[in-house]
Amino acid sequence: MLAFCAPHAGRHRGAGLLDAIVALTLLAFGVLGLALVLTRLQADARTTLARGTAIGLIADMGERMHVNRGAALQGAYALHWGQHTVATACDTQACNAQAWAQTDLYQWLSDVRTQLPGGDAAIFVSDWDSTHFGIAIAWHANEASQADTDPATYKAPFGIDARLPQRNGLACPVHAVCHLAYVTP
Image 1 (tube, rainbow, N blue to C red):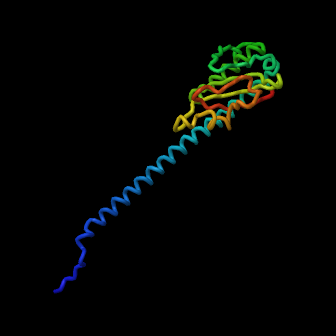
Image 2: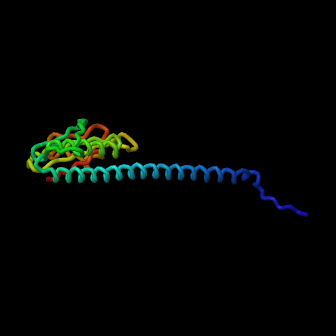
């Protein structure tokens, strides 16, 4: 029996193994890339959920101020970053408009801090019209890198814009994402 052998068969030994290693390496990079994309999508989903929650909370405070318009126009709903409010017993006893405003602020600020990670809020009278109020909500940024929370790039399109004079000196807290809306009670 004659056996035919390729003249250079010895040089190609292990080529299949090398091809498999290259293929596995490429597959590993693909899976790593997919994992990074999924991580980014999850962070974006959390940010979107937080922004939606903030919008709902701003609408809630706007309605509370509308119901208690007299106290709102007298400044009873003013709130600064980090300010703590005191609970009143307006749900069990008769209260005046100012006390209702304090009850609203206490309940609402409790919701902000419960529903958003590191949630905080500020409410102020706008500079251009004393019947308009700015309601700003801040929460901890959950972004992948510090560059994502840079005010010049990430927060500016969505939150408190330094170019607007009507923000009444308000600035978003450091390392937070903010949402600002104006309401008329």
